[in-house]
Image (tube, rainbow, N blue to C red):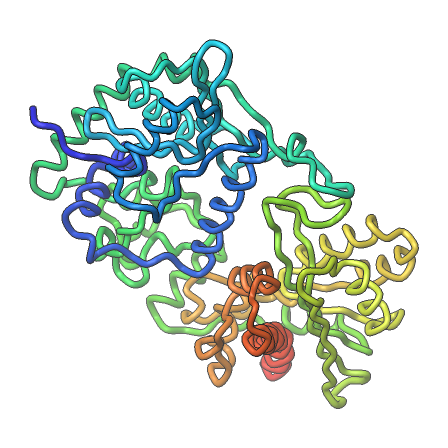
Length: 489
């Protein structure tokens, strides 16, 4: 059997789905571009990989942009021959499989390979990743003594300078990698046979998102109607896939006796009939819980893998911005306050101080999906005890504007089963939209702020800050509009 060239990432893709790899090799035009949020995650992974090199300082880097892969392989061999002890992105090829090792370090008995992940634990896909690298390096004749996975330790709380040795955890996967060598060989044969054939007939299934979200899903899901059983809110994934396996895609094909809760029945009936569901009594009960002054609150947070500030753990949510719209009295004038931290600084204490100044005692606070805002405030109160007596009353006064929509007291088919703010707003206030915004979701906002301090052009930084202000402001203005619509109903 003639071999087919593969990279390590292509091998991992093929393990997940032969069709995905076939499309990657033969129909790259069908591949979806990563969203800004996905790209931010990729960039974060790259940064974590570079940071982990400090575990073995003084090594030589084989830069991705320096020459062809053949040249990188020759340079790697040259460094090994000349007595190099540590190489970053050491490049090897064996059996037409190309790998670039994050960290290759010379130990007392042989070479150790280290794969770095921004994950907080070892996953099976990581074991396969290390196993194929072990296969290639051993195949080239390089003696591999140990194979490790380096990942983030999410129990580490930063204090002062970043402690690289506490930030990362190193797991020995040597035994696993050795045990998986026959698996690697078997899967390589299957993958190569699949690539040489016509497009594999692989149906969609949970594997499309496990372990990674596939970037060919639009192509593979083109037979799925715009609204399908996959959109039924709070129906388990297992039940959705069971319906699909029975050939049931559209709401109209769901058996009448299929077990659904009341909210799901409302969603399906609204889709089939176009009928709006408005429970005036439930809406009135919700409105009666509100009092004045009334504050609409929304936070934006970012959660970098590498903690930037004292007391913060990896991936811990750190608030950097909020928007507040408020009314001092019923039907009164709408006012607005906002806060956006200076980039590159610890935003938490100043944000907390500004927040308690902007929201007076005995106010009613509305948030959308308020568990998020409450969690942010609880964490701030824990981090800054001197502000706890002012922060916790705000926390305790928060009510959730999502409740009437989550409980289907107000539902329109345009919501497509979702009760998120981004779904409710166009359904009830189509005159307002996030579509023309340069920053249009929380992931974009988080990524934009996280990298803001790296932008050297002051004019560009000012533009991004303006975009952040506009996005967060729209979130609370949308809440104001949605409350008005509930009152009208």
